[in-house]
Image 1 (tube, helix red, strand yellow):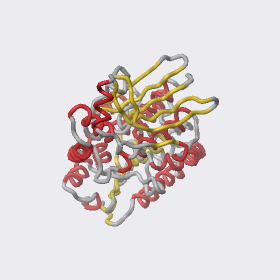
Image 2: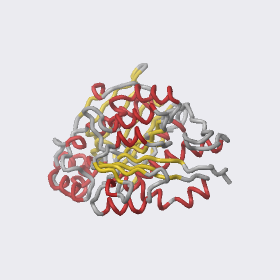
Image 3: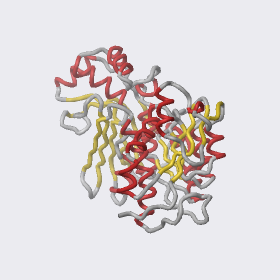
Image 4: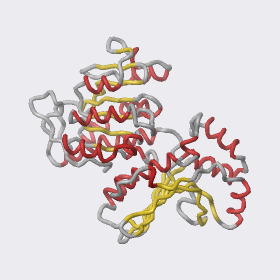
Length: 375
């Protein structure tokens, strides 16, 4: 039985949209198993959305926050503790907490506001778990250095392929192997569209409209269908798994807008499937990085994935060819990946016997790890 921490682990949640709200729902649902199986107790002491924040040192009532968001209201309306117009950055700077959960919308132009949230948290020695890929795409080396300097953990398994533990698999289980080729089908929107076109004869516009109605595509799907979301995830995999410090400019990117029903029918007739594939291919001491619609043999692991699936394949020198896939019909698995990362931070420290007391305001604190990664 794990040793019980003497104080709850204090969490902040920046962004209470599809992923952030589901994270709170999961935390409420799994409180007893987390306590009994992992020896972990959590308190959400702050939450922020685009309209304000709610801060309570003793911990917010999760159901109240969940109900507010389900009713289309801001957490700023939380009784007694709501702060209208207060920003998530102000919350991070003001709150005494142990972990920031960053789930604000991704902004590939400058990474804000998520980048500022993460930098502020790491600067205060606060662990960060993020589902927001943009800060990592734009500032991975800087954020990693900041985490290492302050002894905080930076974890981000939810940034690539939702709930699929792609980064964890690459870093933890294949960390000693040479990965000579990586293939990822990591954008659900593009895969949904291509699969529905190929299997059900829909036009591109019909498949996109269906994806939007199902919640798999944004009103503006440009990042997804033009390949930039996939390229962003490839950049994160390059940094964290392959040890290659690249930017978006190092990836050759081609989207799916030009893929026609005729092309898909021809591929099927030839025993092929067309998928938007991210590829990192070993070349000398480095890799060649591409994102493009790719004709795959029907037997290829990624060719077999359905409309609501994502996956990854690692070709290695000593571990064989390893593939993993996930069915992700809703953002719930992505939220679960964030919870998995939080639990990973503290369960490792429990196993190492490093628990004293959790809060930074206590007389003694938990030793913070120095590894900052998606492990």
